[in-house]
Length: 231
Ligand code: URA
Figure 1 (cartoon, rainbow, N blue to C red):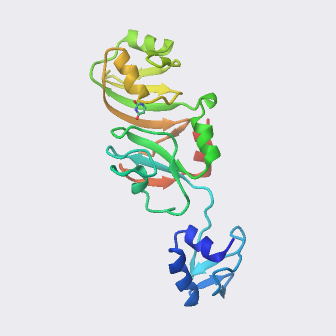
Figure 2 (figure 1 turned 90 degrees about the vertical axis):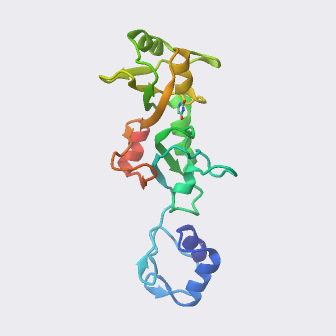
Figure 3 (figure 1 turned 180 degrees about the vertical axis):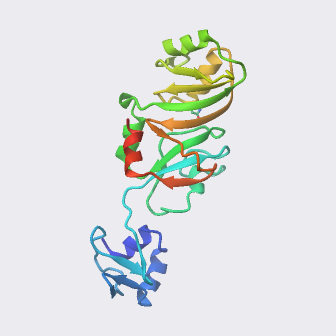
């Protein structure tokens, strides 16, 4: 990979800023100053530093974000802020959100630049479960739990069986679904003559939202967590 591309991709600066750094002898490859933008490096093996600071090579990125309300799940939008506006790092790595949460939905959303990972989580054939905490308008009944378990009738066809779990206060419930249809949870509640007042995704696969992340905060997933998502 060209040295200037590597530095720009790792967020050190724009191509022209990087060129200036190189010119001013501020970049070292394996301990030696390098001035050439077009110098070839092996990012897996060579050690690149800028003014002595090590530049970590990142190829694939996996991020969990605690999404606040008011942001849309897209990479760009002319009118609204997007979840990407909340991510300060990895600017040049073409990250995108995995699936969608509605603008008013909060909680766990993943971002990546790994198309295969995205496919593995989103594909209906892979049956990756998603758990949402719902604050509903009315308390749910035993009958509602059974209707969800059987599969709620929606306008675009019957939903797959879903698990509805209540806490002591039964207006706050947890629903587990494996599909990701448009407004699915809201439409499922509407179909049982109830309404979702607040929706928060708390888990994808076996990966729970990190409770230490405040709304708007994010962090990279560990290798173990990348596995957990797909279970
Ligand atoms: N179901 C919904 O209705 N909205 C979401 O954001 C996610 C699931």
